[in-house]
Image 1 (cartoon, rainbow, N blue to C red):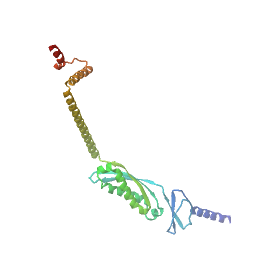
Image 2 (image 1 turned 180 degrees about the vertical axis):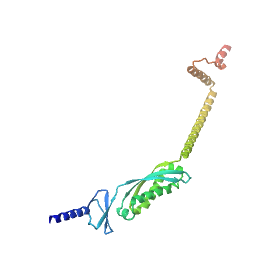
Image 3 (image 1 turned 135 degrees about the vertical axis):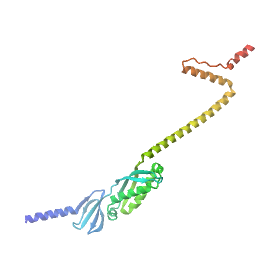
Image 4 (image 1 turned 90 degrees about the vertical axis):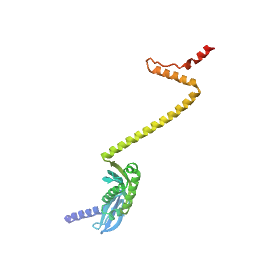
Length: 249
């Protein structure tokens, strides 16, 4: 009798272990009963009918999927390599199991093809400067295609754009030329403002000739303070005009 009881006890324990399942807060169990969908359950303690029910466990947490580098030819015929990262989560576990065989693989392939398609319609300057707009467009397209699978795509971010060496050198020369152009424009604007101030100063000095002499003496003072050398300069006769007028009287 004891030899019969032990195998039965082992079978009962095995059946109970296969019938009792515990799901975490972020997990759901999709139940199939004799091959037919019986719905999603969880979290907590789940009781299954042994040999009849089969459970597929699905995580509801947000997943970060790395999109491998893709060879893309932009609209202006520039070959680049672009990789991205995709953030998504399962919101309907039954659809993620029933509507698609492997939702992770399917989402990854969809992200790669969409990345090549969308970036192929953009020019290189747009790809580098309007990245936020492209990310939004990628998110909307991928989310619309994965919605029948019960998947919500929350964010798509382009991580890196790998440019050819020739294109990098060309862009460096373009940036350098742009900086030189701005420097010349700023220098010309400064010269224009200085000429206006000089014209204004000349107009004022014209009305007060003595101011010119004072400016001349000030310049001599500055030259003498900066250099320890002998400076020969002409003395304007206007400086002695007052003395000559006094002597003639």
